[in-house]
Image 1: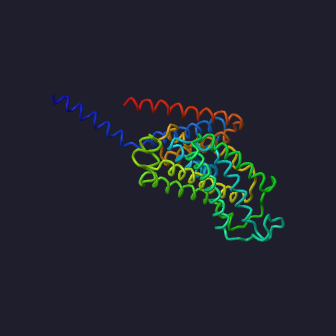
Image 2: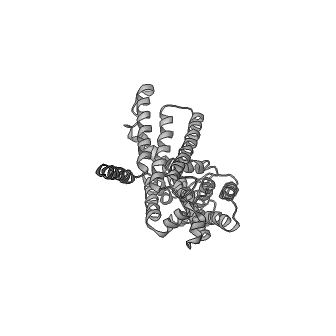
Image 3: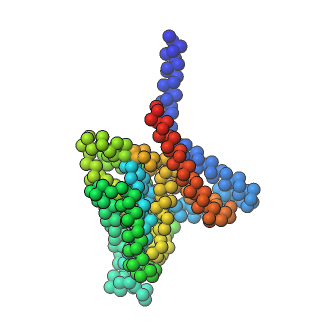
Length: 341
């Protein structure tokens, strides 16, 4: 009898110890493993260290910061059981529009000569606001008309990209003020990404907004019965995702110090990839911003590592696709195992 009690106590202790390990720990181990593989391959094929080059690592983090901002919004959408395919196009649209009111008076071909030298808060607010409107429209279509999120956001993806091309008839917008460009210089894109991640990590874990988001993704009918206004909350989630895509568009334009209609192409897929690699389940109800941050870094390490090893860009896309599918397959088996227990 004492042996059974001891065995039960040991098993319960093991269960508790497993629960103490955050789900992001395994994802972090994957990140370390990928980085070490590139380190070994670097010495074998290139004769250089991958991890000991601070300039390479800095460039890598800066490159993924914009994807990370988008991915934080996409994470919340996927937790509700939805999807957002429009974020990359919203980046291009908001980059063009915000840059058009961020031009300096010294630029001879200003799009709006009477709106030059405006304070940076104006183009930044405009870009974020337009992204918010785009996300709000997505949410309204999904919540009110009940059309699938895939279709609603696909329509926005096409429309937003069309707007970004039509806005200046395909011409780039240049001559931006130094005040506006500042948000894209140095380490600022990374700071913006980390601040956004921190805000929504807290929101998802410790606020009613987060509880509602997870509840809808886990079981939408149960959430509705428990008194949650599902439609209103979905509109809010998609609006936030659009707002963050708008912010990413502003940062993209500021980093490049110019805006072009082709900005943000395929960003939505990279953001979804970072989210899924970070442990967010495509079936909804599961996911954390911290995992998405690690997933974003994994995506950056992979891209930087391929470039470091001089792997052709075509192969990079192939491997990235394989990793996305593998992450989804792992998630499917993880969900099956969770249901059994």
